[in-house]
Image 1 (cartoon, rainbow, N blue to C red):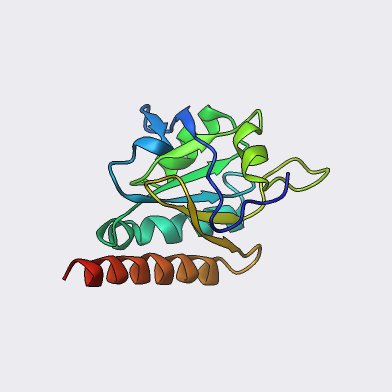
Image 2: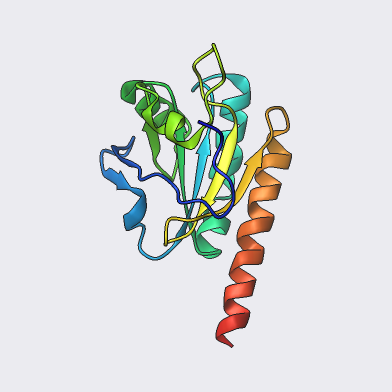
Amino acid sequence: MATLKVGERAPEIDAVASDGKRFVLSEQGGLCTVVYFYPKAFTPGCTAETRLFNDNFNEILLAGANIVGISTDDLDTQCRFAGDLSLRFPLIADKDRRIATAYGVLWPLVGVAQRYTFVVSPQMLVEAVFHHELSMKQHRDDVLRFVHARFEAQRGAVI
C-alpha cells in the first residue's frame, strides 16, 4: 500500500499504549491527532525526534492537537522508552506491523516504519503528511507550523 495522502481517510488505530490505556484514534475528544511513526525506540534519531515532540507537547496540545508515537517495537520496549524519556503522550507498539502497513510507511525489506507524521482530523481525514528521515528538527518544525496554522484558521472562523 502507498503512503496515505492528504484528504484520504486515516485507518483506525485501536491499541493499548505505553501509558496502559487503550488509544482509539476516532475517540480523541474532537481534537486533531498528530500520529508520528519512527523506526526503533532507543536509537539516536528516534530518541531525538521523540524528545523534540515531548518538549513541545504543551504547545501541540494548546494548538488543539493530541499526539501519539508508533513504532514496530513491542509494548514492553515502548513502555521502557516512554518511561526513560518521561513522555507526556502515549506510544503504541506495532510489532505485527498492522498499523504501519495500513498507513503505508514500512521500509521495503527492512520491515520498520519510516519517519512519517500524519495530522488526522477528528473526522479521521488526513490533513497533512510530513516525511523527514534525517532532519528531526525540520520534521518537528513542520508539524508545529501546521498545527498552529490549523488552530489559527479555526479560531479565525469562529470569531
